[in-house]
Every structure is written in C-alpha cells, then in structure tokens.
Length: 164
Image 1 (cartoon, helix red, strand yellow):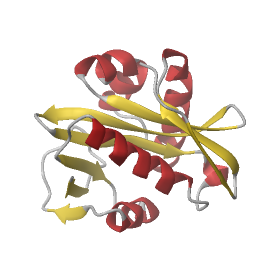
Image 2: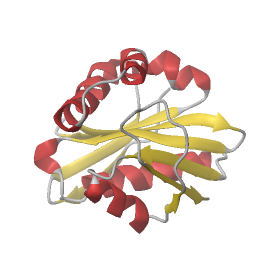
Image 3: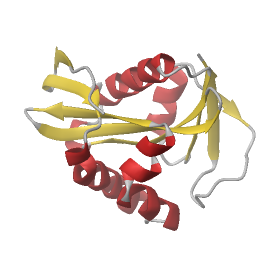
Image 4: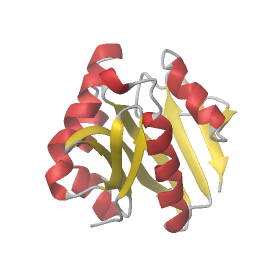
C-alpha cells in the first residue's frame, strides 16, 4: 500500500502527495467529516466508507491519495472501483485554511494520474451544486456534466465524468 511521494513547493510550503497508508485512516475520516458536517450532515454511506477506508476502498481495488504539509494531513481523494476501467472520484477534501491555494488541484491531478496507472478509462463523480469551487475544479480538469442519476447520497445533485 505504499506509493511514490511527490513534493512540490508552492504557496502552502512543501506539499507531499502519496498513496494512503493504514495510519492515515483517522486523517482521511477527519478531513471528510469536516466538510460534510459543515455543508450537509453525515449520511449512512459516509459512515461506512470513512469508518473503514481500507476495507471499503483499498481491498475493493481502489486507492486514496493523501496530501501532507509538514507532516500534517491537509487533503485527500479516493478512487472507488465501479466496473472494469471505471472509478468513482470520491471523498475529496482539503483542509479549510488551505482552500483556494491550489492544493485541491494538485490532489485531483495526482488522483487522475493514479487512476491512469491503475488502468482506468473513465472517472465518474457525484457532488452538490453548493460546492461551486469543487465543480469548477472538476470542469477545469476535464470532467463533463451528466444527467441526474441514482446515488447513495441524498445531497448528490451534480454528476460528472471524464474519459482517460
């Protein structure tokens, strides 16, 4: 479950991007609970995934990209297998004080790169129209809007995909 580390110098200092390790489980949960509680409220599916990211994501063939600054987890993004070559981009979070500084863009770019290396041919995602900055980022990195579809999340009202 290791991965290559990548460090970039930017406005936030040195940002290290690497694949999830078991000791990252609490940070992954905390980063996601913070934004979900702020904007929506936790749902059953959130509790399942955040309570066991190894079992729910990694052991199913997915991956999680984690971001750190000075050893502190500041962001994450998961790839959840949907079908052959298709992954859902999910649970993308950036520490609130670092939003708007390019951290999310770097996490998403690394997530897309990771998906390609895993053999992905398409990425999908579900989000909410309240998260305009996230939607803009997804659009900027090639995601296109889809018609509404069923989702395990009541908050999901924006659906997108991109081919790789």
